[in-house]
Length: 432
Image (cartoon, rainbow, N blue to C red; front, side, top):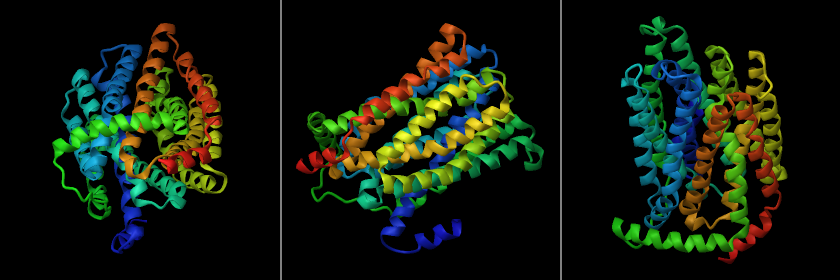
């Protein structure tokens, strides 16, 4: 596969741009998989926050995720407007990616028991990760023809699952047999894994910097003019969104159902630890999700192309409802593996089809700003979901009731999505 990508990158034209764009998912998904979903929750609970109770560490982890999401939520639309005004999507992507890479590597240096510093560095790294994704997502309309949106969006997520899974498997091997890699113990191996993720993220981001072309605006304006114009464009877009009723309705639906998806991603390992499952079993489950997710995301792209993105999203939401109910009832670790397979089947699909459906509804020349709103609501979901789950866990002293509360989000999101008329939305977009 790597050889195929190298051959494509040596070519000119559309294929090289598309592959270079999709490879950023391969690059930064290592952080999402190894750090956010995998090692950080376990390491935070057992190494940095070992002196805290299980419910207190769950709460602190939820707060850390919520704070990072809140920062992006507040600034995403304005940053998108500024990037649109100055044709600066790649520049903003570079800034946030470098921030995430440096902070991810910084986790290596945090001492045992220093959970507050670990949380702060994690927040900054996650802001870099999520902020970069805002501008990465917005580039899709500059790189990919509309007829290929479902397939290429799914390709990105598929490569993300595969790349994240490859890195995660290597890092798991390093923690299981640390002496083979010249390391003292599993704790040192986990810390080294943060450095490895930073390196992977940086190296595989290079094709995007080199080969993805962003249209340059003819008028040469300063950064201050971009900022001032960005404020005005943000106000104009808020007015346009009120006119684009289909876009507004989709954003609210997306906000709800992606809240449930992101919360499951961020809190699954913590949930498994809290109900007494072995950490190694949870790591295996995450690996299963990654490698199931690669072909499943590609298949969802084909499904969206044939039957429509909205239909594919409904299928995924239905599966997530079943996942949530089952998760609240599981007693054995083997069941966690079953949940991992089910999540892998639909997680990439619901993310990729949501992105491609939204891309069809928005004005292409304002993609960064509109994806700013898209990411704003997605990140607000990542604020509300973990906090809700953490609050229910503390209030009821039941992690099972906490995960069951996510049903509200999936059901409400599906109801709103039902009323999203894609054809009407495209007509409104073309009228602007």
